[in-house]
Amino acid sequence: MCGIVGYIGTKKASPILVNGLKRLEYRGYDSAGISTMEKDEISLMKDMGRVKNLEELPGINDLEGTIGIAHTRWATHGKPSKENSHPHMDNSKTFSVVHNGIIENYESLREKLKSEGYTFYSDTDTENIPNLIHYYYQKLENEKGIERFLKAVRNACLDLKGSFAIEVICKDFPDNMIVVRKDSPLVIGKADGENYLSSDIPAILSFTRTFYLLDDLDFAVLSRDNVKFYDSDLNPIEKEVKSIEWDAVGADKNGYEDYMLKEIYEQATSTRETVGTRFQGAKTSFDELDFTKEYLSSLTRIYIVACGTAMHAGLAGKIAIEKLSKIPTEVDIASEFRYRDPLVDEKTLCIFLTQSGETADTIAALKLSKAKGAKTLAISNVIGSSITREADLSIYTHAGPEIAVASTKAYTSQVVLMNVLAIHMAEVLENNDQTYLDSLKKDILELPEKVEETLKISESLKDFARKVYQEKDVFYLGRGVDYAIATEGCLKLKEISYIHSESYAGGELKHGTIALIEKGITVIGVLTDKDLIKKSVSNLQEVITRGAKTLIITNQDFDTSAFDVVLTIPETNTFISPVLAVIPLQLFAYYVAKEKGLDVDKPRNLAKSVTVE
Ligand code: M6R
Image 1 (cartoon, protein in one colour):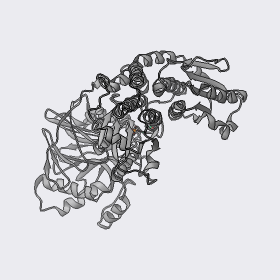
Image 2 (cartoon, rainbow, N blue to C red):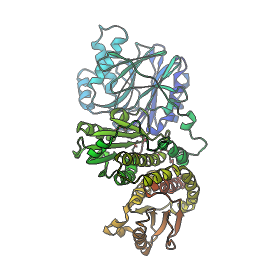
Image 3 (cartoon, protein in one colour):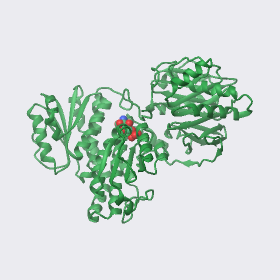
Image 4 (cartoon, protein in one colour):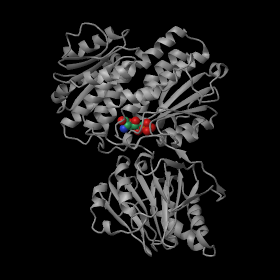
């Protein structure tokens, strides 16, 4: 869980690299470092802590090199320390390497290299890589020119088991850099006489809008005005240049105090973007999909597989997909699914939901499903992300870059897109009343306006947050789709405010949890499904009797006099009520975390993309 940046051009590399790292801090921030090509040697500067510490290192502004690599780390192998931070160099200081990912066979590689006389100065898996490259480089001494460097990198990579995005510079080739990726993200931004590298597009979007996307084990040899690509056998290959239309401002805070707040307030726009033009014809259009009536009728099951917030969006999406397509649909946590030998075959459609498209468990679950013969559909927010290149089919949420670690607008866009997909399936299957489907489409199209309204209404929760921020436990309750919403609201509070919280399906309460309810404890109830309101109200009565104070999020009209705080949001179809009902819960979590003075964008122990298992 790290971020990497690279630059090769005519400008001083170090400020470009440091700025790029700052934009990637969401991927990790326990240490940072850079290497630049300085006259006839490679410089190395690194330190513990945030990129700011690196920026303040004496001498960093004196670096003149116009080629460099940089890294912001989130420790996996080896504790956060200066020694363990990247870049790492080989013993002879010929190569410098930054790496994002995990080398699973690092112990055996280390033993092998030690037996060849190499010494290790860190506890990392990464330090193997420059030494392994050096090992092969020595063996290739009869090779001439850049071929020797390229072959050494390639031979080293073939020895690596695990995931990696790697940038390498070599003292003997001061005008080149070599990069490669496998199961970890890396993009190359192409500009005039210079090239940029990054773990994600937004970090370098202010420099260029044209990108090359690398597939697994594609090798790229960069010079200032050229990039040459090779496959894993080192045959030259061509790569298409992709243009990105995102606005660079879209990736900035845009005047908001935090990315999370900005992203919460972007949800009217992002949900609108998600729907796009899909409802413009008489039937929902998904040109990217090849779902025929025959194919959908042949399905015995749909799995929605994801992690964290995306999995919670899956819980909400399941309800719409199963009800509208009438195909049994299950939601599974990717890290469980991949190890339980799931019953998946060609009659199964597996949907993988992931904002980043880089979550290791979700990608592994997809590979497993593919191997078992299922059709795989990736739903991601990041164009060209790893998962979309593995999946048979891909569709995008188009929510725009999500920078805050806590996912907000990606969740609402995922819920919207799964509903649009559910309508599409029902239309292809012709097994639903079209008038009902059209009314759901209308409700979806009205969401952005209702999101705006909900945002305004939810601001009143600041007061409630002030009453709750010092508490130790908060409980969330709901039934049906409201349970899915409660679960996501609960995660939001946990991850950014560090308050212990639990979500329960209302009916489960009396099977154990009610033992924890005592005077003064806060219980938040989500009540948007009118068919289940009475049941949920009676669960809430049970906690009120035991002294709980309650906040209710509802869009229904019923007797709410028993509750302490009632927030009434706009009504909509139950399938899409998570899009509105989650907003007060996102803002509540945000207000609580701010009240506690916490860094909401970078909560402790968390990184934006979990690219390792
Ligand atoms: O990029 P993904 O959607 O695959 O990420 C999945 C989870 O890691 C992510 O949703 C995580 O739970 C967020 N921090 C929640 O806010």
